[in-house]
Length: 73
Image (cartoon, rainbow, N blue to C red):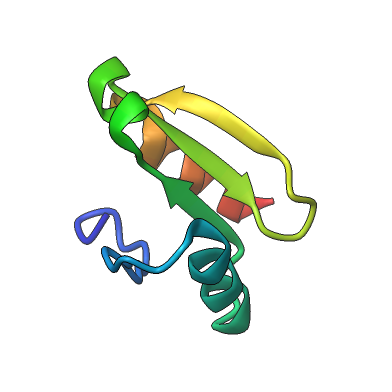
């Protein structure tokens, strides 16, 4: 993400997912990336649109391209 010049804030704490999403909303994140154990095993990541709440699962190798595409909208 750094090479792609995409700003990132990360949360690896033990807070609940709801608390982490609330914090992302508070700092004005347009999208959140959710990577749990299931996604890590499958080589995927969830992109969540913070405005609409819609989520889409994408392959890890495509996440930067997808985020760049969405940020251009």
